[in-house]
Amino acid sequence: MIVKKISLAVTALFSITMFAQETATTSLDIKPEVKLSYLDSVKSSFKKDEVAAKVDSLWMKECLSLDIYNDFSTDIQTVNTDQDVNAELPTELLKQRLQAMNEKSPFNIEYNQGLENIIKSFLKNRKKSISRLMALSEYYFPIFEETFAKQNIPLEIKYLAIVESALNPKAVSRMGATGLWQFMYGTGKQYALKIDSYVDERSDPLKSTAAASDYFSKMYTIFGDWELVLASYNSGPGNVTKAIRRSGGQTKYWDIRSNLPKETQGYVPAFYATMYLFEYHKEHGINPERAVVKNFETDTVNVKSEMSFKQIADLLDMPQSQIQLLNPSYKLNVVPFYQGENHFIRLPKDKIATFVSNEDKIYAYVRHEAENKTMSSRLALKVTPKAKVQLNKAIDTDVQLYKIQKGDNLGAIAEKYDVSISDIKKWNHLRSNSVALGRTLKIKSDVDPLKASKEAKTIPAIEKKSEEAIAAVDDKDKTTGKAQEYVVVAGDNLGSIAKKFGTTIAELKELNNLTSNNIGLGKTLVISKEIPAIEETAAVNTAIASNASVDSFKKKTASAKSMGEDYYVKKGDSLYSISKKYPGVTISDIKKWNGIKNEDLKPGMKLKING
Image (tube, rainbow, N blue to C red; front, side, top):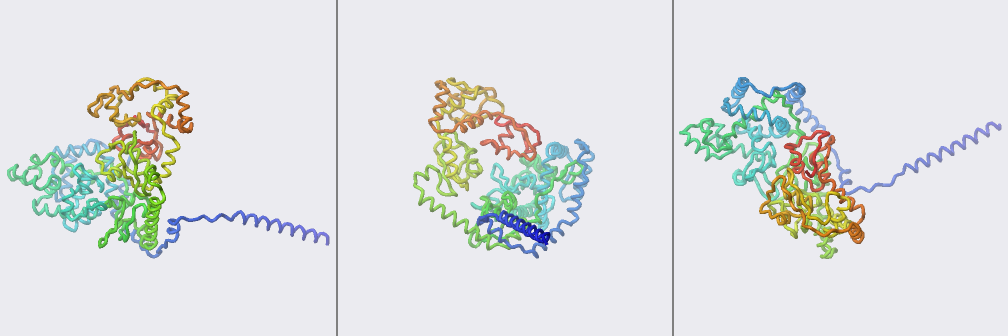
């Protein structure tokens, strides 16, 4: 009996302990409720159409099973990348291959020494670029071929877009020709391509290709020879007819070539050389890269309200750069909305499905954003005093004003507001990168100017001479009280030197009696005039009096010491990511300082930063 009572007591005690543990565990599992943003709440409510997704999946599977794509994949897999490729191309072998190309083409492809030289030059210098272009061609060539087939245009003319624009729909020539097919403004208007503040259809792959196809068809009706059609596309039909007359009535390209403009004399051979490299890439060890997205994997949807690329990217969880790639005709990264006109956005098919299934919620979010932006602008104008608005250089969260100060340049301003230099130039109608001291710039940015202003205020303004004295405490290379000099090295220009020493080009030219911006290698420049020496204690006292933190001055000194440092490339680095690590440094600066002609980087490569 006693044993039974003891066992019951132990069981009860054990049950109480287990219940307490469960209660404690349950209490620990309770987590505070996380408040979702409006954007997250909209996205979490998106519905998915499973039937439509299944149809899309089956269609994609059918597209991917086409023989042409399987054959292409097999070619890539069977290329032996370790096998040495003979850079020399025997003339007889080239003749045989050109003859084979001629037999299956309406073009008159004949061997000549000039064509051989261009092909060998391309093989020597353009193999890597051809590999990248082959990836782009997977997206663009199906568009070209479908359009040309409708008007019986030779499909080989698709290679002309590589010669014209390197398959870059945003390409703009020095003369202003724009897009894949490099239409001038007047020619674009002639072929009914819309060009306004928001849209430039010369950059639209579908519409610009249709316009180019119309041009080719009309020129063939005039000349009756496809090589002369290519020549007229480059130099205009007038120059071709002049060359025909000067050649005594000859009507073949190679017969009139010497009487064509110099650029056009190399135009058709460059077209044939490009065609040859694409046709015989495998024989020359060119391993094609794969397209990030193929045209048949995308679709379009009509947009019924003005939307920015950023809003679309946020809602659909996709990179904004991909939207830019698929929609190059929108100049301001905004899909506009005009009454009585339709505007479409091209997206990957899975994103189109999400967009169409949730249009009401997407447009509600866009309206919400527009109302909030409008409200914040009004509040900023009503609540903020005019003097304070001027101090912070902001009118609202979209358009901000910035007054140029001594030492400013467009690169630094663009980085501060997270925008591009080209955008700042466009917003302020600037033709060059030089900006006048005191000028006020308009900047469209989402960066909070109040926050930027507060961060700027943490380092109070100090007179230039005092700042130089503080920097001189730790910088042994600078001598106090003497005129500062600098010896010009390779890659220098007045702009980079002025930026390095916190001065202006005008001051450098005045100090050194320069009449132009040209400076010779090895020339010694006076950077600043002789100034009275400042004691270290005075510099430190100045720093303390101005309430600047010691850490801020250490950062400035470290920044000054970093001029001329080396950077070793890591895996995953790009010129863009490296330039972001050094404020004021651009991709073109890094290329110039290191003699880089393309953007190929290898882990372990040593780069010079700031010369």
